[in-house]
Length: 262
Image (cartoon, rainbow, N blue to C red):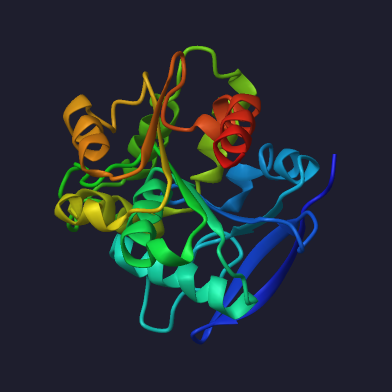
């Protein structure tokens, strides 16, 4: 299997880390990670897509993983994440990419589809919706206010996977989120605040909307609302899968993306 290689690029003054795999002459796919994590979540899917003939770019959002934070501090909205991704696309000179993401990355994907539909070949939004719900965290997640916040975060991660997720993948997900206190808090607040449902009609590029049955972060009503409002949507529901399809069922996700883009 082809191996990912990593490097840095300046995106609007932020030193941004990304990994690539596959021939740059092929269709480019940009894959976005979940809240408080980084691009390692796509390490099972990205090389497999490259082997199928795609050029895959997997960035770490600002302040996540190996990417440096923005000078003004962590992103606090989904729209800021979307701007960072589109800045990366511009910096790398990519035209007509496919964008895909999960959770916060799924919301970011939909935001990009709303704002850049004409410049996208397609979008794959997993475990995201036109509006998403969450707790208003405020300062409750500050380590002095809630010393057990990291335990709460790790539990919410591992409890949101499906029943067939291998135990080693479950532990890997927990580990990926372990050093993400401030970043995860901002991401989860951005998730809770995200509501662009009334703008989904602008996202008229092809969109695949993926939901794992065992993901309690995405409720039936927001999933159905998103399907109803997207002009060109292919909804997919995965049984025995939770909030992290690319980690829980990478082979299935790879096949879904490939078939969607054919």
